[in-house]
Amino acid sequence: MIDTHAHLMFPEFKDDIVNVLKRAKDAGISKIINVGCDLKSCKSSVEMGAKYPELFGTLGMHPYEAQFVNDSLMNEWRKLILENKKIVAIGECGLDYFKAKVEKEIQKKAFILQIKLAKEFDLPIIVHNRDADIDCLEILDEEFADLKKVPVVFHCYGSDLEFARRLWDRGIYTSFTGIITYPNARELREVAREVPMDLFMVETDCPYLAPQSYRGKRNESSYVLEVVREIARVKGISFKEVEKISTLNAEKFFELNQR
Ligand code: NI
Image (tube, rainbow, N blue to C red; front, side, top):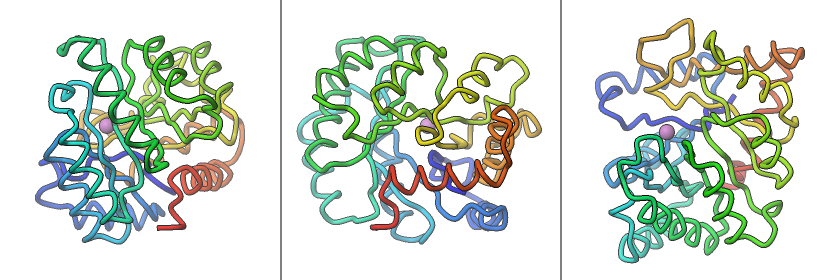
């Protein structure tokens, strides 16, 4: 299995990262995408990718960090991407209108700058979207003539089934976290039931969003098993099959076998 979205550089893992990685390995997780979301975590993402063979890095600024995204940062990232084969994606980046802490226009500008960099290097894009469905899709449609040719994932998918269908029509992936195991996540389970087999991935988004059986605790990569189990249950197929397909999807999406 592959945990396609973790933040193992966060302080929550400072004291026991080695044990966290060992438990993940023992649970059958062979690779982890260790996602950057601000200046500090991007730096750690690259460093940890160099240190741990199973970790792959990304460069991305969460929408709440949008004010720090500018041309000079993109230039720094250009250098990092050229020097580091283990930087496998741009993101997480996108739009978050939930608390609208940062002005929408500033968020959009930052999202577009990061998309343009991804285009330049043919890197996949990890999208963070909260309450901004239409604007996210509008920007992607404007930036790409044919989204089917570009690996884009809406991570921690949380919108409705109708919007998911619009994404799938464009070849955009949806990725599921432990939220899918929460009792009130009925609609999300419907999305998982309907998602085409070639357009989904699994993730923890740890340290956040621990699945139901660990709820309230720190989440970690080994718990991605719970997400696989729940998708298998709602799709009415075996754990093994979801394990296999989600792994193939992630390897293809991030081109992990070429790194
Ligand atoms: Ni995240």
